[in-house]
Length: 457
Figure 1 (cartoon, helix red, strand yellow):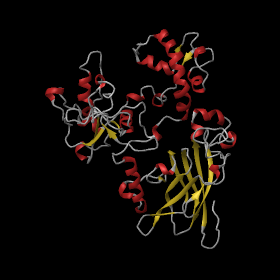
Figure 2 (spheres, helix red, strand yellow):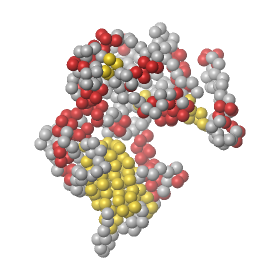
Figure 3 (cartoon, helix red, strand yellow):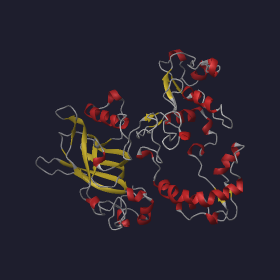
Figure 4 (spheres, one colour):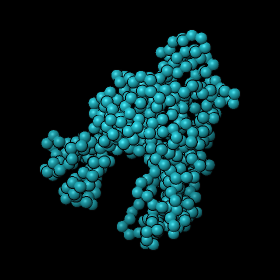
């Protein structure tokens, strides 16, 4: 909704910001927010009265005033340097507790932006968090933009205090572009965001970082504690170029400059961490409860090293479930997530929700389409290469790793090429992880009682 304000003020564009506070997503704060969002929790969200860690200074009413600011960025109009115009900094205003589209524990706020024809159509926005606590930004929607309509930004990302970032957090409209089709006013901002995600390979990773960087496995041992705990570096050599791990940038050990100091925590970009249900219920009291009571019970009932002999046994976890000893459920703590997993209707059944891939078809996981989807989605590390020679030729030494001749034929491919032949297709891409892991897997399998496998082409 917008209205003409008169003079040079142009229009006011209404926006709706949907977010979730850290306090809602933390286990201790769920107790304070069981009645809903900000209103139901009173001072529970960003609340000073409850003394919640991370919300002591901000206070419950602070979110309504000047703690979260947004600046629109134009996708069609440029400044003097050729970059998209940046609008005035605007703060969140009215809380919208009754918005019908809100999800569980989400809160919405209205925000109004000054707009005129010289600004053009927004394509991105900066956001600043001036609070001590981070919050989870779900989405931003701009309504009734003249000659355009509605623009929706799907965010789903944690936003920390503005001082944590070298550059302001930026989000782009829910529209994808090929690099050469990106609107010119947004090119600079896209490039900067890509640099933020790649990092520069320096410094130690912090909780608020969003960098996806990789390093060799050089933190498997602890030579400073004992020489017996020293471990070689895995990856990075011509003989063993892989595997890789997420780079953390911790200080090297004193005795071995090539080894990184071990840590009890693992750096994962915050947006990749578990959601609030697993983080709050399962990963806190749930694990403690299972470790102390449930696992010993299962160990006694089924044996620690019990394995599945048939696929039907695996499917049974999702269909019929596992019948537990009669006293097992009474030993499980009454947490919401555990109540959902361990049924208490007298059937004494441990039943897991079925994976999405087999909800429609039990054999869907065996299809080429699903295998390709999982490879591209990053279930396993892989290489994507343009096929230069057909059939594909391996670079591994056959005298060491055996015959690597591919059995893929033209007939295998042409059934999916829409009537074209292999020669008529300009680009065919090969997705593989075999070369990456074969050397490591063969080394592991050289030890007794170890059997590791790797995916073929």
